Length: 401
Image 1 (cartoon, rainbow, N blue to C red):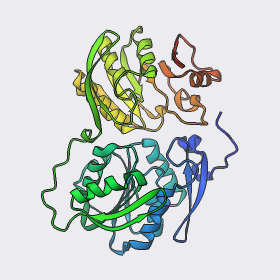
Image 2: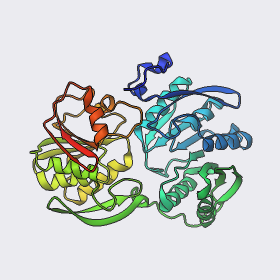
Image 3: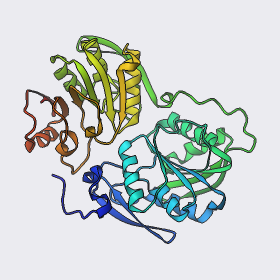
């Protein structure tokens, strides 16, 4: 069960996602006292991480905010960087982006906790559009987006800042050389660099006279890892796959058990796929139950999962109007009527899976696949669902409820 000895500030205790708060950390930025709710479900769950501290220090020492109005915090996480800047410089307009909706919900939570208002929040893969221009763009760059992802992000940062604007990023040390290579190829001007023991900070801007900025690629293209034909459960289908999600080359145990459970069912109506990964399970269900499934509702925190699965469903013949994406933190936030919930649960340490997976779901069929120990914990205390079918293999269990 979730630990109950954490005392939460009154203004956030009633928020839905407060159940995922594991620590409230104190933090000081240039004399401003702040508090941040942190979670095992997000990066840096115990304290403000080393890279963020280094980046904020260099910003405080080197950036003059007098002429800065519009700021973008990319991959905001719990919102620490942008909230610190807004607290110190109330005049700035901050936009927070992240591909993880739970991160954006925690950012909103932390903004309220620190009396920050008037900010914007957007679920995006990297930078969705370069049409809007910002005076200052900041990011604690994710370490595992791959070389193509890094190049796409940095080039879009350079084309997204206003004339005379600036970008500031922090990366882990092993990425330092790659960042310098990408910035040099883009003719970016590195205005400041500081290396710590584990991280390196760069402040940079676009060249004053850029030569032929390349057109933006399709949103998913920097993340694509493969494009191949797969054969599972008697069905052949083509699937694009992306970096840093499971099942990129073959159907894994967890997804395979879930698909194996479902192909023996009689699915119809609206099916919600929570954490659809690369899209194997929804595509197999389309092959098996084509014409009977009326809506494919793709839902979860991770926008990359939702977008690659949508792309793969359409590539395999599902009409666009039959696909809905719902970028939300909790499955209970999906408002549509659903006949079948098909769930790969979020992996959140020290959290009761029932509280975030089954609690508050309306009556419907539920199919869940996870490690066997997690399925046991998920089901041991709940009384709302009965087990109809269960299959186990190699430490994983799929159950129909």
